[in-house]
Image (cartoon, rainbow, N blue to C red; front, side):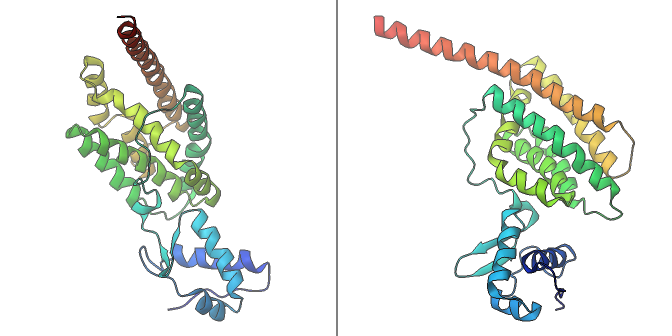
Length: 262
């Protein structure tokens, strides 16, 4: 197996770039174990410490997983944003929600532009999440839809190839997932408004479909306008949720106080 060699420059950065290139070009595929730090160092002509520093950078952006006592493995796409340890309590504040909205506007729209500038890009994870969303909607499966919605947007950022974007999202992924949990509750409530929203999302003209078809070169669109559709609609739904949550809390507090008085 050929491994990228490096020339004289800042060694830790050079090793990181070489390993990253090997992962991207398929020298090591998803789920495969990398050679040991010692072996990599010998083949690249650098120290084990230098290799370890490069691997730590790859780990920070979620491209590899270090399993103590076993070695370093390339992370499978579906594992990069593992949700197994996420908190399920919906407790985003309005400030946190608005900050995530701003983060999406800053990073997702630029990620889409970066994807469209590339001659070749792997859209498999994006497509898998998109069709997974549609299936979950048809099945009225809130948890699965939220997972696929989250993966759809995160896969766009991953496909951009921008390591800084990926690292930022990796840091805030728990809050990012909560954001989608909060939003998607509205489509699965037993109301006329929720059913209308769900039916619109099932259609081929909803915002997710427009974005997916744009990424796969099946249509053209105004990217800024589409992102505004996403974020503005989200703000309205979250405001409605906050009002409902506040009313419910006041009702519970009132009932609790009434019991104390009696």
